Length: 294
Image (cartoon, rainbow, N blue to C red; front, top):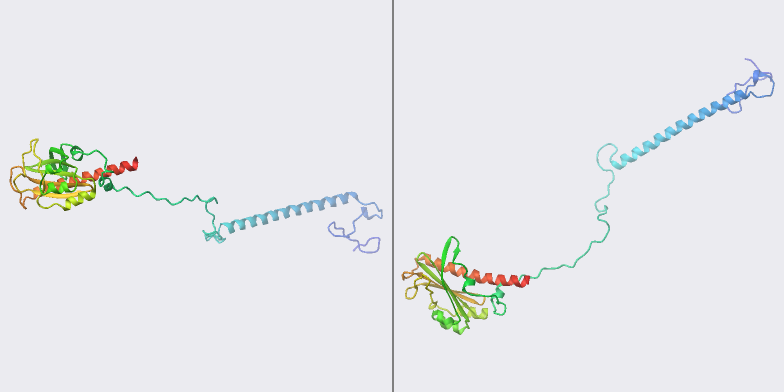
Protein backbone atom coordinates (compact mmCIF):
# COMPACT_ATOMS: atom_id res chain seq x y z
CA UNK A 1 0.00 0.00 0.00
CA UNK A 2 1.32 3.38 -0.83
CA UNK A 3 0.92 6.31 1.46
CA UNK A 4 0.80 9.98 0.77
CA UNK A 5 3.15 12.58 1.96
CA UNK A 6 0.98 13.27 4.99
CA UNK A 7 1.92 9.94 6.54
CA UNK A 8 -1.65 8.42 6.28
CA UNK A 9 -3.37 6.31 3.65
CA UNK A 10 -4.33 8.14 0.47
CA UNK A 11 -8.10 8.32 0.00
CA UNK A 12 -9.73 7.39 -3.36
CA UNK A 13 -11.91 10.32 -4.31
CA UNK A 14 -15.46 9.48 -5.11
CA UNK A 15 -17.67 12.32 -6.32
CA UNK A 16 -20.70 10.61 -4.71
CA UNK A 17 -19.00 10.11 -1.30
CA UNK A 18 -19.27 13.12 0.99
CA UNK A 19 -16.01 14.52 2.47
CA UNK A 20 -13.81 12.32 0.25
CA UNK A 21 -10.49 13.87 -0.65
CA UNK A 22 -10.21 15.20 -4.13
CA UNK A 23 -6.97 14.28 -5.90
CA UNK A 24 -4.76 17.03 -7.01
CA UNK A 25 -2.64 17.22 -10.05
CA UNK A 26 0.12 14.61 -9.90
CA UNK A 27 -0.14 14.44 -6.16
CA UNK A 28 1.77 17.68 -5.99
CA UNK A 29 1.54 19.72 -2.92
CA UNK A 30 0.42 22.59 -5.08
CA UNK A 31 -2.88 23.90 -3.68
CA UNK A 32 -4.31 24.77 -7.13
CA UNK A 33 -7.44 22.57 -7.87
CA UNK A 34 -7.78 20.52 -11.03
CA UNK A 35 -10.58 22.47 -12.70
CA UNK A 36 -11.02 20.01 -15.54
CA UNK A 37 -11.62 17.15 -13.14
CA UNK A 38 -14.11 19.20 -11.16
CA UNK A 39 -16.08 20.08 -14.29
CA UNK A 40 -16.17 16.45 -15.41
CA UNK A 41 -17.40 15.36 -11.99
CA UNK A 42 -20.09 18.02 -11.96
CA UNK A 43 -21.33 16.95 -15.41
CA UNK A 44 -21.45 13.32 -14.29
CA UNK A 45 -23.54 14.24 -11.26
CA UNK A 46 -25.92 16.29 -13.43
CA UNK A 47 -26.44 13.38 -15.84
CA UNK A 48 -27.25 10.95 -13.04
CA UNK A 49 -29.64 13.44 -11.49
CA UNK A 50 -31.48 13.84 -14.84
CA UNK A 51 -31.72 10.08 -15.25
CA UNK A 52 -33.17 9.83 -11.76
CA UNK A 53 -35.85 12.46 -12.44
CA UNK A 54 -36.75 10.87 -15.78
CA UNK A 55 -37.08 7.44 -14.16
CA UNK A 56 -39.12 8.88 -11.30
CA UNK A 57 -41.42 10.65 -13.73
CA UNK A 58 -42.03 7.37 -15.60
CA UNK A 59 -42.84 5.61 -12.36
CA UNK A 60 -45.27 8.41 -11.39
CA UNK A 61 -46.96 8.21 -14.78
CA UNK A 62 -47.26 4.44 -14.42
CA UNK A 63 -48.77 4.86 -10.96
CA UNK A 64 -51.30 7.42 -12.20
CA UNK A 65 -52.25 5.16 -15.13
CA UNK A 66 -52.77 2.24 -12.77
CA UNK A 67 -54.95 4.36 -10.49
CA UNK A 68 -57.08 5.50 -13.45
CA UNK A 69 -57.45 1.91 -14.70
CA UNK A 70 -58.57 0.79 -11.24
CA UNK A 71 -61.06 3.67 -11.09
CA UNK A 72 -62.49 2.68 -14.49
CA UNK A 73 -62.88 -0.97 -13.44
CA UNK A 74 -64.52 0.09 -10.20
CA UNK A 75 -67.00 2.31 -12.02
CA UNK A 76 -67.83 -0.19 -14.78
CA UNK A 77 -68.31 -3.27 -12.68
CA UNK A 78 -66.72 -6.11 -10.80
CA UNK A 79 -62.92 -6.06 -11.29
CA UNK A 80 -63.03 -9.82 -11.69
CA UNK A 81 -65.16 -9.40 -14.82
CA UNK A 82 -68.42 -10.73 -13.40
CA UNK A 83 -70.35 -8.13 -15.44
CA UNK A 84 -72.42 -7.04 -12.43
CA UNK A 85 -72.66 -3.31 -11.81
CA UNK A 86 -70.62 -2.35 -8.78
CA UNK A 87 -72.79 0.50 -7.56
CA UNK A 88 -75.85 1.92 -9.31
CA UNK A 89 -78.57 4.06 -7.77
CA UNK A 90 -81.87 2.37 -7.10
CA UNK A 91 -84.88 3.37 -9.13
CA UNK A 92 -86.10 5.45 -6.21
CA UNK A 93 -82.89 7.51 -6.29
CA UNK A 94 -82.81 8.08 -10.05
CA UNK A 95 -84.21 11.52 -10.88
CA UNK A 96 -87.04 11.57 -13.42
CA UNK A 97 -88.40 14.31 -15.61
CA UNK A 98 -86.99 17.76 -15.97
CA UNK A 99 -87.81 18.86 -12.46
CA UNK A 100 -90.65 21.08 -13.61
CA UNK A 101 -94.08 20.65 -12.07
CA UNK A 102 -96.65 18.80 -14.18
CA UNK A 103 -99.76 20.87 -15.05
CA UNK A 104 -102.88 19.80 -13.25
CA UNK A 105 -106.41 20.03 -14.56
CA UNK A 106 -109.72 19.81 -12.85
CA UNK A 107 -111.54 16.57 -13.70
CA UNK A 108 -114.23 17.09 -16.26
CA UNK A 109 -117.05 14.89 -17.44
CA UNK A 110 -119.02 15.00 -20.65
CA UNK A 111 -122.66 15.92 -20.27
CA UNK A 112 -125.02 12.95 -20.36
CA UNK A 113 -126.40 12.24 -23.83
CA UNK A 114 -129.85 13.54 -24.56
CA UNK A 115 -132.62 10.96 -24.45
CA UNK A 116 -134.21 10.70 -27.92
CA UNK A 117 -137.49 9.64 -26.39
CA UNK A 118 -137.82 13.03 -24.67
CA UNK A 119 -138.04 14.69 -28.07
CA UNK A 120 -141.00 12.57 -29.17
CA UNK A 121 -142.79 12.59 -25.82
CA UNK A 122 -144.01 16.20 -25.74
CA UNK A 123 -145.21 18.46 -28.54
CA UNK A 124 -143.09 21.37 -27.23
CA UNK A 125 -139.90 19.42 -28.09
CA UNK A 126 -141.23 17.35 -30.98
CA UNK A 127 -141.26 20.17 -33.50
CA UNK A 128 -139.77 18.55 -36.62
CA UNK A 129 -142.04 18.23 -39.67
CA UNK A 130 -144.13 15.07 -39.78
CA UNK A 131 -146.46 13.35 -42.22
CA UNK A 132 -147.15 9.94 -43.81
CA UNK A 133 -144.46 10.52 -46.42
CA UNK A 134 -141.89 11.39 -43.72
CA UNK A 135 -142.62 8.45 -41.43
CA UNK A 136 -143.03 6.05 -44.36
CA UNK A 137 -140.80 7.26 -47.22
CA UNK A 138 -140.17 5.58 -50.57
CA UNK A 139 -142.24 3.11 -52.52
CA UNK A 140 -141.35 -0.02 -50.56
CA UNK A 141 -139.62 -1.16 -47.39
CA UNK A 142 -137.47 -4.15 -46.56
CA UNK A 143 -137.53 -6.04 -43.27
CA UNK A 144 -134.87 -8.73 -43.22
CA UNK A 145 -135.22 -10.44 -46.57
CA UNK A 146 -138.88 -9.51 -47.02
CA UNK A 147 -139.88 -6.63 -49.30
CA UNK A 148 -143.23 -4.88 -48.86
CA UNK A 149 -144.73 -2.67 -51.54
CA UNK A 150 -146.07 0.66 -50.42
CA UNK A 151 -149.71 1.46 -51.27
CA UNK A 152 -151.99 4.39 -50.42
CA UNK A 153 -151.47 6.91 -47.58
CA UNK A 154 -153.93 9.10 -45.67
CA UNK A 155 -153.75 11.88 -43.09
CA UNK A 156 -156.60 13.31 -41.05
CA UNK A 157 -157.19 15.60 -38.07
CA UNK A 158 -160.40 13.75 -37.28
CA UNK A 159 -158.97 10.68 -35.59
CA UNK A 160 -162.36 9.02 -35.01
CA UNK A 161 -163.09 9.07 -38.77
CA UNK A 162 -160.20 6.65 -39.40
CA UNK A 163 -161.02 4.29 -36.55
CA UNK A 164 -163.48 1.43 -36.03
CA UNK A 165 -165.12 -0.20 -33.08
CA UNK A 166 -164.12 1.18 -29.70
CA UNK A 167 -160.97 2.86 -30.98
CA UNK A 168 -162.81 5.98 -32.16
CA UNK A 169 -163.94 6.83 -28.64
CA UNK A 170 -160.54 6.01 -27.11
CA UNK A 171 -158.77 8.37 -29.47
CA UNK A 172 -161.27 11.15 -28.93
CA UNK A 173 -161.29 10.85 -25.15
CA UNK A 174 -157.51 11.07 -24.91
CA UNK A 175 -157.06 14.09 -27.18
CA UNK A 176 -155.83 12.57 -30.45
CA UNK A 177 -154.96 15.45 -32.78
CA UNK A 178 -153.97 13.57 -35.92
CA UNK A 179 -154.15 10.10 -37.45
CA UNK A 180 -151.85 9.08 -40.33
CA UNK A 181 -152.25 5.82 -42.25
CA UNK A 182 -150.33 3.81 -44.84
CA UNK A 183 -150.89 0.40 -46.43
CA UNK A 184 -148.29 -2.16 -47.58
CA UNK A 185 -148.91 -5.37 -49.54
CA UNK A 186 -147.17 -8.65 -50.25
CA UNK A 187 -148.31 -11.96 -51.76
CA UNK A 188 -152.07 -11.36 -51.44
CA UNK A 189 -151.73 -9.92 -47.93
CA UNK A 190 -152.24 -6.31 -46.92
CA UNK A 191 -151.54 -4.39 -43.70
CA UNK A 192 -152.56 -0.86 -42.73
CA UNK A 193 -150.56 1.05 -40.11
CA UNK A 194 -152.24 3.91 -38.26
CA UNK A 195 -150.22 6.42 -36.19
CA UNK A 196 -152.20 8.56 -33.76
CA UNK A 197 -150.60 11.76 -32.48
CA UNK A 198 -151.19 13.18 -28.98
CA UNK A 199 -149.80 16.20 -27.16
CA UNK A 200 -148.02 14.14 -24.49
CA UNK A 201 -146.72 10.67 -23.79
CA UNK A 202 -149.16 10.29 -20.91
CA UNK A 203 -152.11 10.68 -23.30
CA UNK A 204 -150.70 8.14 -25.73
CA UNK A 205 -150.08 5.60 -22.96
CA UNK A 206 -153.60 6.10 -21.59
CA UNK A 207 -155.08 5.62 -25.06
CA UNK A 208 -153.14 2.40 -25.51
CA UNK A 209 -154.34 1.06 -22.17
CA UNK A 210 -157.93 2.02 -23.01
CA UNK A 211 -158.09 -0.19 -26.12
CA UNK A 212 -159.58 -3.67 -26.34
CA UNK A 213 -160.06 -6.38 -28.97
CA UNK A 214 -162.65 -4.24 -30.74
CA UNK A 215 -160.35 -1.19 -31.03
CA UNK A 216 -159.34 -1.33 -34.71
CA UNK A 217 -157.82 1.17 -37.10
CA UNK A 218 -159.71 1.38 -40.41
CA UNK A 219 -157.95 -0.44 -43.25
CA UNK A 220 -156.88 1.77 -46.15
CA UNK A 221 -157.46 0.65 -49.73
CA UNK A 222 -156.80 2.35 -53.07
CA UNK A 223 -153.96 2.79 -55.55
CA UNK A 224 -154.43 -0.79 -56.75
CA UNK A 225 -155.03 -2.24 -53.31
CA UNK A 226 -158.40 -3.94 -52.92
CA UNK A 227 -160.54 -3.37 -49.89
CA UNK A 228 -159.68 -5.78 -47.08
CA UNK A 229 -160.61 -6.45 -43.50
CA UNK A 230 -164.03 -4.81 -43.85
CA UNK A 231 -166.00 -7.90 -42.91
CA UNK A 232 -163.40 -10.66 -42.68
CA UNK A 233 -161.50 -11.62 -39.56
CA UNK A 234 -158.15 -9.87 -39.46
CA UNK A 235 -155.31 -9.57 -37.00
CA UNK A 236 -154.68 -6.23 -35.21
CA UNK A 237 -152.05 -4.85 -32.82
CA UNK A 238 -151.73 -1.77 -30.55
CA UNK A 239 -148.65 -0.10 -29.13
CA UNK A 240 -147.18 3.31 -28.26
CA UNK A 241 -143.89 5.18 -28.07
CA UNK A 242 -143.55 8.72 -26.82
CA UNK A 243 -146.61 10.78 -27.72
CA UNK A 244 -147.53 8.39 -30.53
CA UNK A 245 -149.87 5.40 -30.41
CA UNK A 246 -149.68 3.10 -33.42
CA UNK A 247 -151.97 0.35 -34.65
CA UNK A 248 -151.89 -2.33 -37.36
CA UNK A 249 -154.54 -4.41 -39.08
CA UNK A 250 -153.46 -7.21 -41.41
CA UNK A 251 -155.43 -9.67 -43.55
CA UNK A 252 -155.98 -11.14 -46.98
CA UNK A 253 -157.00 -9.01 -49.96
CA UNK A 254 -159.32 -11.80 -51.19
CA UNK A 255 -161.56 -11.50 -48.12
CA UNK A 256 -160.39 -14.74 -46.46
CA UNK A 257 -160.45 -14.86 -42.68
CA UNK A 258 -157.16 -14.94 -40.83
CA UNK A 259 -156.63 -17.91 -38.54
CA UNK A 260 -153.90 -18.79 -36.08
CA UNK A 261 -152.27 -20.95 -38.75
CA UNK A 262 -151.70 -17.94 -41.00
CA UNK A 263 -148.34 -17.08 -39.54
CA UNK A 264 -147.35 -15.06 -42.61
CA UNK A 265 -150.11 -12.55 -41.81
CA UNK A 266 -148.87 -12.30 -38.21
CA UNK A 267 -145.35 -11.72 -39.45
CA UNK A 268 -146.53 -9.00 -41.83
CA UNK A 269 -148.29 -7.12 -39.04
CA UNK A 270 -145.30 -7.50 -36.69
CA UNK A 271 -142.87 -6.28 -39.35
CA UNK A 272 -144.83 -3.12 -40.00
CA UNK A 273 -145.32 -2.48 -36.29
CA UNK A 274 -141.56 -2.82 -35.75
CA UNK A 275 -140.82 -0.52 -38.67
CA UNK A 276 -143.18 2.13 -37.28
CA UNK A 277 -141.50 1.98 -33.88
CA UNK A 278 -138.06 2.42 -35.48
CA UNK A 279 -139.23 5.40 -37.50
CA UNK A 280 -140.61 7.21 -34.45
CA UNK A 281 -137.43 6.47 -32.50
CA UNK A 282 -135.26 7.74 -35.38
CA UNK A 283 -137.31 10.93 -35.31
CA UNK A 284 -136.36 11.39 -31.66
CA UNK A 285 -132.69 10.59 -32.34
CA UNK A 286 -132.52 13.15 -35.15
CA UNK A 287 -133.97 15.90 -32.99
CA UNK A 288 -131.72 15.03 -30.04
CA UNK A 289 -128.68 15.16 -32.31
CA UNK A 290 -129.77 18.52 -33.72
CA UNK A 291 -130.19 19.90 -30.18
CA UNK A 292 -126.63 18.85 -29.24
CA UNK A 293 -124.97 20.12 -32.41
CA UNK A 294 -127.08 23.23 -32.72
